[in-house]
Image 1: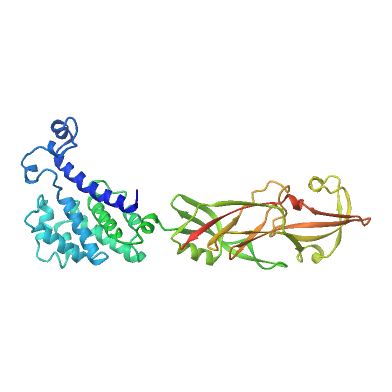
Image 2: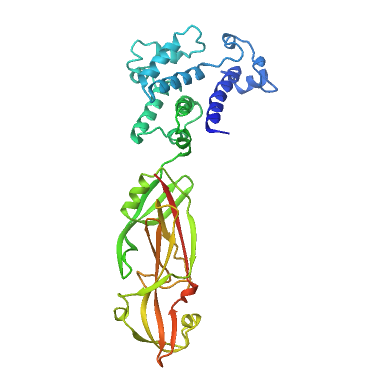
Amino acid sequence: MGIKNKIYGTLFGQAIGDALGLGTEFMTKAEAKEKYPDGLTEYSQIIRDYHRAKFQPGMWSDDTDMMLCIANAIIEDKGINLHTIARNFKNWLYAPDTRGVGQTTYKVLSIADYVEKPQQVAELIGPSRTAKNRIGYVINAIKKKTEEHNKTNIFSLYYKFKNYTMKKIITTTLAFMALITISSCSNDVESSLIQQEKVIVEKTSSHIKTRAAYTSKEGLSTENKDLYSIKYKDINLKNIPLRKEEVNMLSSANSISATIPVSVKGYSEWTVRTNGHKGGNWYKLAISSKNKTAAACGIAPGIYIVRDVWLWQTYTLPTPLAIVFSNNNYSDYTKMGWEPETLRTPGFTCALSGTKVTLKTAATLIKYSIDGAETYKTYPVKASNLEWNFYYITVSL
């Protein structure tokens, strides 16, 4: 079912439900059960008492009339104008076929200044007495939210009022369906309905030294980043390190994807780790027979000629509008080298440039044994066993 058909279904459902509901309006549950023991499903079942005799079978009540007044005003102005809505209410009140106007609604609409000052007039009558008196407040609230966001985000505005009791949201529902009506005239209706909430980015901790920004393959430039929580619909990410530009991108995003996991194996190349021992130059390293990590890499006990290196891998994302997070959940060094910033635990860093993700971990290249035999092994992880596990989210602006 298309979006427009759903909108029509909502509007027609309101009118039909209103017309049927008229059959039990102002009745208690006991009275409704007595009058309609088998339920009320046909207009012909509606009893013809004093109240209902004013309506022909199938006619809706003032609730649907007022919904249409709001809808027509929004279509006319391509937005919310309280004075146009008030004018339509006033014209409806004095139309010859208007039926069922409530006493308080009549008092509000019949005041001479209502069209010019709808909010102030509604307040004079007493905003807490009936649901219909809240129409000015509801529309004003929706208008305010619309101006704040510079767009009519229908569902998120409606959800602002979701905790009200059913009676109290009657007028909110009318305004809500009117907003749907105007949106159905737009080519962007589907995207406006799909986007139900804004992406919420909240700082959880400040100045955490986290992932590195790579200025070159020889250097590692650490940054002080803040940790954030990211919320959108049912997506809830916690303590994610973000750069300022990433926060700005998320704050202006229309939507984000769920996290997408990626696993890449092996490595593409190695480079000298100039901030390592001896500035990346060759040095001697003794491997003990008790070193189980070295044994897992196939390195026998002995003395070797080694140098500290970076191990690299890359991955290409489908879009540059993304944020990448490393998943350093490694229990040992069977699949990962040293985390580049601490060199104390298994892990890696990742950086995104365009669509290219650059992955980096620290290791030691063991090239020769002390007797000159070539080994070409890496420690603490066997380079061919590397497994880079990370995830990313895509951003829609």
